[in-house]
Every structure is written in structure tokens, then in C-alpha cells.
Length: 314
Image (cartoon, rainbow, N blue to C red; front, side, top):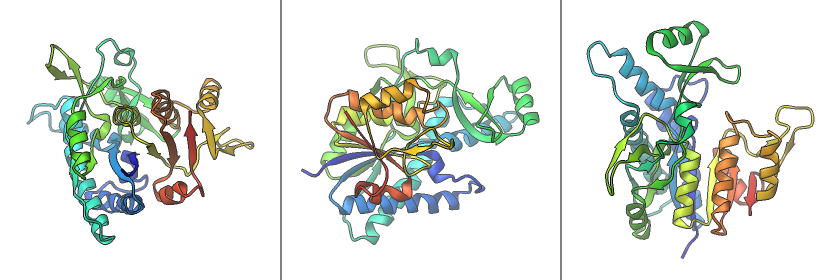
């Protein structure tokens, strides 16, 4: 059987910095990424796609807040579900188009996916996950005062709202995903890290106000599926240490032990490469024997060919 890859694409890969964020732009960006994934399938890979939703879920929340005088506000888990549907539709359509262009006969299917989190997760007391657009200092203060938002300055680019980001412990739709993959479907799942839910009974769950990191959810899904590869797309073609310093060095390979060492040194900040390397470590620690590849969306095929990217292994 062909090798299985879980490919995690960021919400920012669909909504690129400097663009207005229109649906037309997101469709075009999705098609660019889908063409890379179609080439992977052409090479013989079975692919499961996960995606982020940071910008998009923030827009949904913002629309809800701005219409609160005429419509009830939407809870964050519903906003995540909303983004899963919208982005899933865009990605499935792009994948179907890209596969048709290459003469591939496969069906892309999006699965509405819930991920279980722990109510005792400390993330609920320490919101860190940025969502939505950048704001000026004045806008940020206004939302703090009027809406009670938690807001932080984001890498010198402005201010963003932050929400709890608990770690996922279980993918509820795992068996459905396995069934679809076995039937030959190209599955899109765990969008935005999955809809965050907590267990309230033997088989009962309810949504909570949070956004799960999509890379951690992707790592969990890849581990549970026994994937051969976890491919994490990001804004750079390779992971670097001493990033943006005179002695910056790109890494072609990184072992699990080296990753732990670099994390302890603070090489990978929480707001950028940190969650991706942490997700890679969690997958490798699962002991499935799979590998991790971190690279940019446009470099996927070159990275698979060993020309760029950062490969991680246990």
C-alpha cells in the first residue's frame, strides 16, 4: 500500500499577509497549495489534509461581535465549526480541481472533526492563541475595555486577540476518517485544530470556548493513523536556529534529541516555529517510525526530493 502523509497547511497559507482576505484570494491560494498536494498524490502518496483557521475564525468572531446588537453572539466552538465548513469547502474544491488537472481520479471529502480537550488544561487560564486581524493599539484597548478580550502585541506587527489553546487528546471522528482513507478518498479533516469539546459522560461531549493548535491536532491524527509522514507547511522553506541573527543557520535534518535541545535553548518561539516543532516532537515520540518534514507550501515537492525543507526523525 502507498505511504500515508498527513499534510498540515496554515490558515495563513490561504490568507496571505498583505492581501485583503477576500474569498477569491483564498480560493486562488488554496489552488496553489492543492497543486502541490496533487503532485504528491501523483508520486504515489495517500494524503490527508489538515488546515489552520487563525485569520478566518477571527473574522467570524469579529462579524458576530459587530452584529451583536441584532443577532446573538456565536460561541467560539461554533465559530471554529463554521470555519471548518467554509475552509473545508474551499480546500476540497481546490484539491478536486488540481487532481483533475493532473488526470487523477480521486474524490476529496471534508470531515467535520471534533477534538477532545481537558477542562483542567492550564491553557484555559493562560490564553495564547492569536486569532483574527491585526489591530492598532487604540483598537486593541477598545476591545479590552468593551469586550473583555485578551490581547497581545504580535511580533511587532500590531495587536491581536488571543484565546485559550488547550492540547487535543482525542480525535472523535478518527474511525470515519480511517474508513474514507481506506475507500480511496482524499480527506480534509481536523480543520482549525478540530472543534474543541470536553467529555461530560461516557459518550457525551459539549463545545468549549477555545481554538486548538492545528499542528498539535495534526500530530495527534497522524499518530493515531500510523502515518508515514507528517508534513507541516509554514512560511519558510527550512527551520533555522538563531533566526534573524547574523549566525542564522538553516537545518536540513534534526533528530528528536536535537529538537529537545533547541527547544530548551528557546530557539523556537511560541508565536512562530515553536508549536510546529512541538507537534513534530509529539508525533515522533509516538513511536510509529514515521518522519516529519517542515517546509513552505511552494517547496513541498522539492522538499520531498531532498532539495530543501527540514527533515525530522526519532
